[in-house]
Length: 174
Image (cartoon, rainbow, N blue to C red; front, side, top):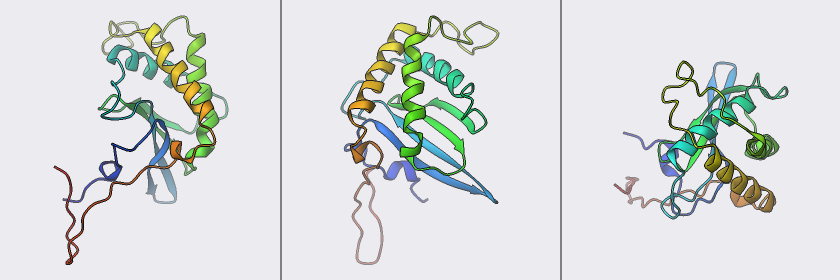
């Protein structure tokens, strides 16, 4: 089987940032998956699950209400490794083009007094939320983005280097 694109990113060298994970063409349309990476994989503790759940609710609500972007948003949700979240948008834009959207989304968490959609009828596990920790992670990431705006590393995936034999066979870590 072919190695999927996200596994070809060097997870030992990636830094927090906004990355284009993949662009899928659907006939005349395209959708782009962005990797919104808050933590350095395998080097920092992952996000607290309850805080991640709250960030999912808070930022999904922000994105789907932003007048300039709400019609472009397809999906916002957590990565299985708990080091970041995925954003899927209609169209194809460079990661730098959504910098302000992401920065403003994370800054908006500071103003939250409650996590939207946390009633039992609205959420699959409404008891698993942590607004205070979500605010802490959001503030940390927003400050990081602001401090690193000119740093190309927050927009470009470091690719994993793979050994290739003389006959073209690729070796992957297992």
